[in-house]
Structures are given as structure tokens and as C-alpha cells.
Image 1: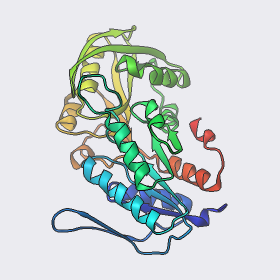
Image 2: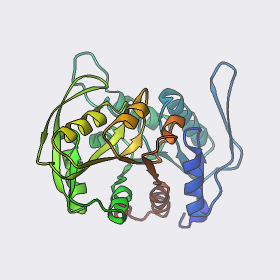
Image 3: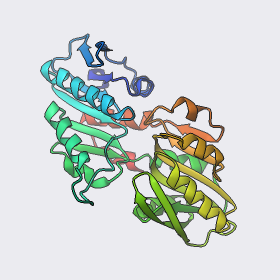
Image 4: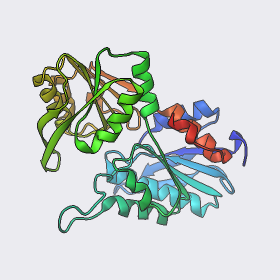
Length: 315
């Protein structure tokens, strides 16, 4: 397989618009399949074309409803394996359960590893994903993982639309490396917030490390779930004298009251990507801009298909 003509790209129900965008970039049609549900809610899948010997890519982020979309992915992988596809690549722009990546408390699972086992057992030959919550999740797989970053897309946006007197802010110490990379590429200063998390989905910002007075601040994160961390960091930056506050993150999970919190927050503009479709409520936010990672994924899919390096996509 050495030409894009042999690529077959299929989609679950999680993000069909992204699949179509990838196909448009590669000048191919989405694969033909039937995705329905039985009356009891079980997922039913049937491939409507010959895939024997094909190089199959299944685009399916495991975003909310996470369990349903994960099960869809597993069923689709199994169908292609049993239909004699030569290779099946699971394209998972957003990898759910990634926050359960270690046993940091008594009697808790490592669900990120469990999901990796499920995907491998279902029959995937490799995984293509973007901005894992924890990079070590790549090691949970016993198959090759291509881990891309949305940084080139997001950084490109801010290079085209620069913010003067910019300070890039990590919302916690765990995000310092990511923020440092953004700051270097954007020729910006660096600051971080010392955050204490008392329990899941509840964050407490303690203090800002770094001088942000009179600066335009850009908070960098991999995802936004409830919006609690992001809005509290923004409030801390404002109290520390920041002039303006912007935020960007790769995965717009935006569950619960996240949209309301962002609308009422100190954040002037939010930049995210389309790894996950925006909720209806998020689409109505006036201060949110969505960048496409379709071209990035399309280039990666083409490189995987042609057995060429994907390293050029990291710059």
C-alpha cells in the first residue's frame, strides 16, 4: 500500500463531521457502513463494502457519552478484524478514561490501561491519538501508538493573531512542560498556578507563581471538563493583576455547568479544537473559537498508510 487510493476511513457516531473533513483533505469518500441501535440500546454495526486486505482507519473519539462511544469503537474494530482487513488503526482524537492513569489512592482502577487492553483485544493494530492527558498512557498499549499534539495548530493561531506582552500560564504544575513549550514558540513569559485538588472535578487555586501584573495571559491545558480549574485560575490571574486573560485547550469536553462558568468567567476568549464536537450550549458561547485538527490527522493517516515518518507533524 503506497498511495492514498488504498485508504479506507470509517466513522462511528462520535464525530462524523471530523471524519468527513479528513476524507475531504485526502480526496476520498468515507467508508460505507450501517450504524444503528437495537431497541434495547445495543449498538449494531455492519460494513457495507468489501474491506478484505484494506488499510482501515476508524475515527472515533471516546467523548461523552463515553461508554457508548467506546463500545462502538470496540464493536467496529472487531467487525473489521473479522472481515479480513489487513490493518486496523483506531483514530481516537480524544482518549476517554485518560485521567485514571495511575493508582494514586487505595482501591481504585487504572482505567486508562483497561481501555488500552480492550482496544488491543478487539483487534486494533495501532492507535492514532492527540494530546493524551498523561503521556505515559502510550506505554499501556502493546501495539504502536502515534501520539500527536495540537500545539502546532494552536500555536499557529496565536502566531497569526499575536497577543502583546504575553505570559503563558500552566494551570497546575503538571502542565508546566506543555506551557513552557508554548512559551518558547510564542516568545512569551511563563507562569504557573499552584493548585490543590481536594476531590475529582473540584479544584482550589492557591497562588500564582510568576509576575503577571499588566500582562496578557494565555492559560494552556489539554482539556476542559467542568471548567472549574480554568475559571479559578483566571480569577487568580485577575487578582494578581493580569491585564487580559485568554485560554486554550485541545479537548472541549465541557460537561455539566462548564459553559455557564466560562461565559461568566474572567476569560476573554477560549480557543479549542474539534477533537470533540461542541455541545449545543458551547456553540452559543460568544467567546469560543474552534480550530480544526482535521488536516493534522489527515496528514498523519496518509503517513501511516504510506509508511513514512510522522515526525514532521510535531513542528
